[in-house]
Amino acid sequence: MDFTRSDFPEGFQFAAATSSYQIEGHSFGGAGKTHWDTFAATPGNVVRAEHGDIACDHYHRWEEDLDLMQAMGLDAYRFSTSWARVLPDGRGTPNQEGLDFYDRLVDGMLARGLNPMVTLYHWELPVALADLGGWRNPDISHWLADYATVIMERIGDRVFSAAPINEPWCVAWLSHFMGHHAPGLRDIRAAAHAMHHVLTGHGRAIQAMRALGVKNLGAVCNFEYAHPADDTPQAAVAAQLYDGHYNRFFLGGLFHGAYPQDVMQGLAPHMPKGWENDFALIGQPLDWCGLNYYTCKRIAPTDGAWPAHTEVAGPLPKTQMGWEIYPDGLHHFLGWVHENYTKGLPLYVTENGMAHPDQIGVPDQARIDYLNAHVGAARRAIKDGVPVAGYTFWSLLDNYEWALGYEKRFGLIHVDFDTLDRTPKASYHALAKALAR
Ligand code: IFM
Image 1: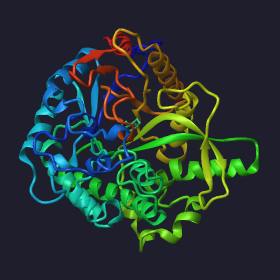
Image 2: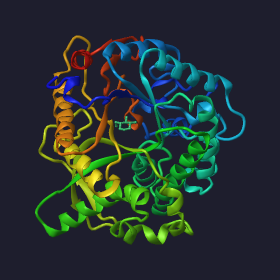
Image 3: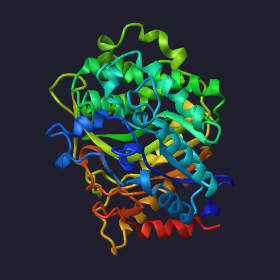
Image 4: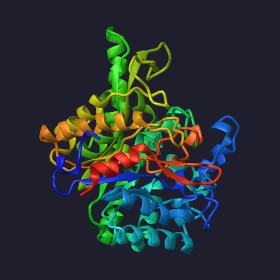
């Protein structure tokens, strides 16, 4: 690696991230069914109809996984708790086995010197709540807050940080407007409702955790740099609107008490009743903000209905996902979020990494290069005065990449999905060397 720990401020947190449905194995330990189970069971939604029943079997192999993080020299582990494991019906009676699992996991992290960074919702909505409309139903903010209370009463005294929801854009837009993720809707009214309810849910969950005395609460959003596909004014407008619904909408709600006007031109007629009155709830004071960053997009105008834009291929080298490698975007967003929204709050890179068709015994030099370039972008932001407080690699393990199944390998550790054997990759060893004290 081009960096070592000593290039970063004292207390800087290097972490690896995963999420519950992507690694745990949801057929174990009394977890309820999630909308990803039914989405994956519907033909055409997920490559080879793959699902999270076993995933990386982290539910049984968590000690080995924590040992690997400790051996790598990480400071923290960003993980998520599964709503459906804690509350199999989404509400009501908790699954004690599930609570015990997260209790053991948090104690296991602390015993190994890893700070637990928890996310409450990384997309595994219990089917009972999906049946009630899921993120389209305004009551979801109360359901999420109740779930936050149940899980945090158990582990909230020992976590380093907590965020309610991972990547609101994916929960709302990707899943309710583009239909790529569960519940697979392509409907502007559903999307507008979900866009707003992820934020009311965030606000109420923050309130619930504050009421319990949980410390260090934040929000995690994802960002993509939107380049106009060409030099025309139409492409500039298209890219600006993409930037609006992807990058500015959620931060606007969280930090400005308003949604961007360009996005509301399309969404306003479809918003839930009374949405204008929810900004005090949404804008709960936060202690930090997390940025997930992977790539940029080239946006071109179309003749279709609002938002009348589409993605086109760009010229830069790409990852296994087909995503262009553009570290300058991370540097841009760290400075831009700090200057325009968070104004001094600690910022964490809560996800960054690349998918690569890794094979055991073949060094993943491409991932080492990718991480060097992106960590370098964060270092530049720190030099500019941006208060970046941590960097999280996605992902600890190769895992279930949602609609793309198991073939997109994001891990620092290779997982053989037949034997479930873990094998650290060259990038893991390079990071271990860089992070050694
Ligand atoms: O695997 C996902 C993760 O669940 C959320 N952020 C992006 C990752 C890579 O696509």
